[in-house]
Image 1: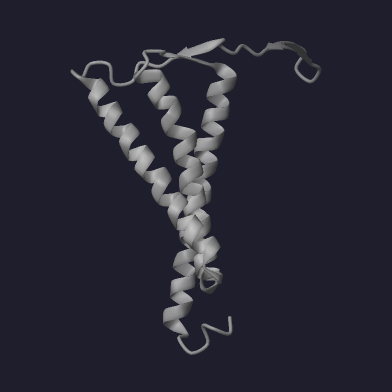
Image 2: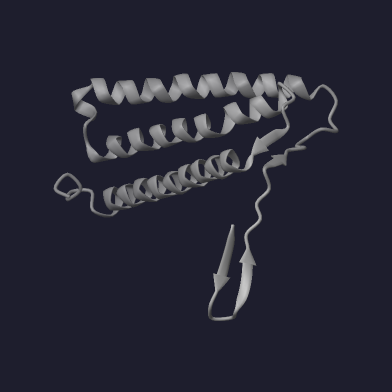
Length: 142
C-alpha cells in the first residue's frame, strides 16, 4: 500500500507480514501432555461458566445487580477462554505453528477486549461490595 504524505513530501509504505511463526514452548519434553491438560481445564471452565450462567438465568431470585455482574463475569470468562485456548491447542497440539496476520490481529483483539471487560467487571463487583459494606441498611435502596 503506497501513500503520499503531502506534508513531508515522502512516500510511506506499510509492510505487514503474511503470517507469523509461533515457536512457543518448543524445548520442553512431552509438551503435548500439558496441552491435553489445558484442554481438560478448558472443558471444565466452559461447563462451569455455562452452569453458573444457566443458574442465574433460570432462578428468578438471582436477578439482582450483583448476580447480573456475576453473570457478566462468567460470560466474559467463557468468551475469553474460547478466544484463547482453541487457537493455542491448534498451534501446539496439532503442530501448525503458522498464524495469518489478520487472524493474529483478530485473536489479539478478542484476548485484550476480554481481559479489559473482565477487569471492569471485577471493579464493578468490588464497588458493589464496598457499597454493601459501607451502607448496609441502604444497600437494597441503591
